[in-house]
Every structure is written in structure tokens, then in C-alpha cells.
Length: 202
Image 1 (cartoon, rainbow, N blue to C red):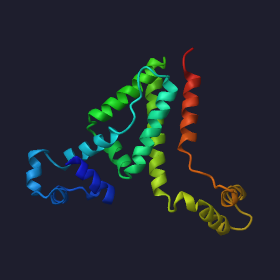
Image 2 (spheres, one colour; image 1 turned 180 degrees about the vertical axis):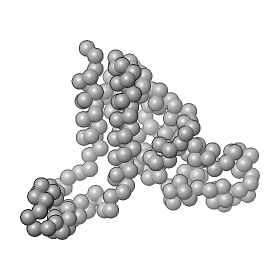
Image 3 (cartoon, rainbow, N blue to C red; image 1 turned 90 degrees about the vertical axis):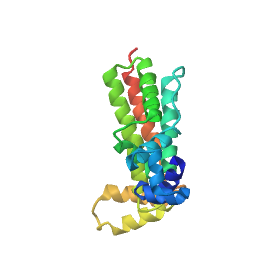
Image 4 (tube, rainbow, N blue to C red; image 1 turned 90 degrees about the horizontal axis):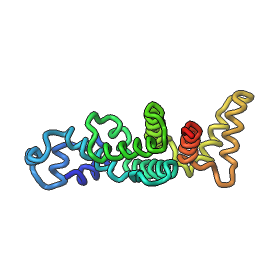
């Protein structure tokens, strides 16, 4: 049932998930679904947790920095496959077992590296903000990454002559770069991890 709900969400966003639609997809009466879940919120909690279950959980016996890096990159890749998931996961009050397991492992990896709990809390918030925020930003762009040079050129042409010289220089560089300027989630992630490393107790 939850896999079917994920397919509905992938097609039309999590707003497309309803008991009626889910019943149609499964070939059953919508009322029969209430034998398995209490309401639609149960479905949304379930699919949010199911997606989180695909995140790579950092092992507790690995180098903290490489383990967290792989884990966060994995989360980013999973969230890109399910465009609706970022906002849904972050909005749920009830964290499921997969979400709890993931967070517990991230906290454990950082705490095991010697970071104080206040620093761990800030680190988790920074990593979450970068991961979920970056995905939401990618999804909101009005053009595909492959179209960035053309979009940048159009943007530069639309600037008033003589105004915003720094913006113009950046846009013209993107427009003329041989391979473009790739969207780089890992650049920001590495800035966070390198900053954390400097805070690590010696």
C-alpha cells in the first residue's frame, strides 16, 4: 500500500495521495484501507519514513567525516528521486523508525568523534538545512541545469546597461563556460564538514 502511495506522490506530489485514489490504484474500496491505517496522515507518515529508509545510515565504526559525507550524499540522491519528499519529511511530527534510526546514527557518528552535544545539534541542523534546502532549491529552478548557459545569457542581456556589474560578470561566465557551471551539492557539504572538522576536539 505504501509503495503504491509513493508512486502516486511521484506522479502528482504528496497532495495527490488520498484514500480514494489509493483505493483505485490498489483495486479496492477506499474504506477497506482503514483496516490497515487510521487516516491519511498515517499514509503520509509511512511514505515519508519509507523514503528515509533508503538513506545510507552511517556506520559507527567508520571515519566520521567520510561516513557522514556518504550518508548525506545518499540522502540528497534519494530526495531528488522523490521531488515531494523533502517538504513532507520535514513537516511530519511523527518520525518513523527509519528516520529515527538515521538520525540516531548521524548523532552517534558525530558524538563518537568527540563533538559536544551542542555542536552535534548545530551540525545536524546545518546538514539537514543544506540537504533539504538544496533539493527544494533545485526543484524550484525555472530551467534545467543543462539550460543554465542560455538562461544566464538571457539574464545578462536583461540587466540595465552599467548596472549590477558583478551579477553581469557572473552570468556571462556561466553563459560562456565551456562545460557550464555544474550544480554542486557536494561543494556546500564539504564546506560544512571541513568547518566541523576544525571544531573537533583534539
